[in-house]
Image 1 (cartoon, helix red, strand yellow):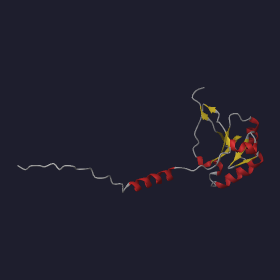
Image 2 (cartoon, rainbow, N blue to C red):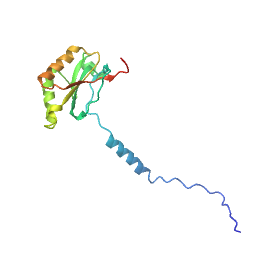
Image 3 (cartoon, helix red, strand yellow):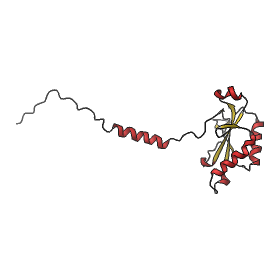
Image 4 (cartoon, one colour):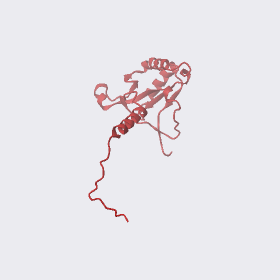
Length: 156
């Protein structure tokens, strides 16, 4: 019969880290592909009003946003605390909405221009007069599809 001998101090081989950079680059590439960059820098603060009947927008690429609310803390020293209208990355007045809608329409394909939607993201404490003025300018610009952003409430 053969005698089996146990060898004494046998240590585990070191863990190979040769494939670790490959794994890290795969994870990095995944997050670079799946993450979207913020399109606009928010210059206003707003808390969306609550609603019970909330629907998601189907094609977000056809939506242009108008933000209405108080300036952020960094901008309050320059612009005060009165509610402001933000179009793209700057404060504008209601007179600039016509040019904003025309520029947003020009970005879209000819077939999609009819289904362009303007989404109003207004603070829940914003006076209705500002929202009405914005709606009147949107009517003059022939932007008749309007949606209002709201957060979903849990009950009535």
